[in-house]
Length: 219
Ligand code: SAM
Image (cartoon, rainbow, N blue to C red; front, side, top):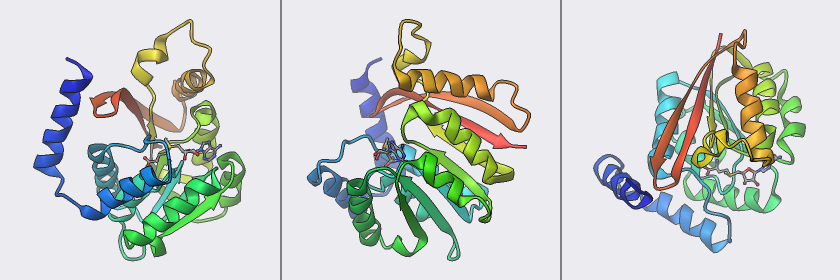
């Protein structure tokens, strides 16, 4: 199998399961026009995030890594009327594009974008109501730190999902000194026998290539 096949199968899944939504396409176009890198989740993954939010009955969602808000919007659409999503983004430019996209999608009133390095924004969230669902998708070298911070903002049952934990198998490349890969490995070391986190990981293929997610539930 190859990327070409994975793409075709993803397209088939989208055709079968994800009703055409001109607004979501418009958002990806706006990202492209603003020269944002196309490193958002795929449509099937966006829908997966949305279903996680539904399954959890989540009211309070935290996202680390907004980009153009594509994944934020998928999740926000599944929130109840009183639901709220907080998303952290380093780049003011990305946050601005995301903010416009959230307006286009009609979910802006449910979303707060906090601009700045997530490592600095996260401690400011302590004392707020704990989050039900956390999606980590920013600078991978900081993944261990984000897990630790997310734990402080969690309660029993909080679900944490981390994207890009396989990176085309580079996870196991012993030669690699890439800080992203090191961050992912340190995250797995942190999750191993963690007293408060019950975790698994799954590999994925699709239009975004070969990668994977970590899923962790707070005890
Ligand atoms: N979740 C988005 C989606 O699927 O639509 C994609 C997020 S993209 C993979 C990663 C984002 O994290 C980028 O927009 C990048 O600017 C942001 N980022 C990188 N380092 C960061 C940091 N230290 N704090 C917060 N955001 C950061």
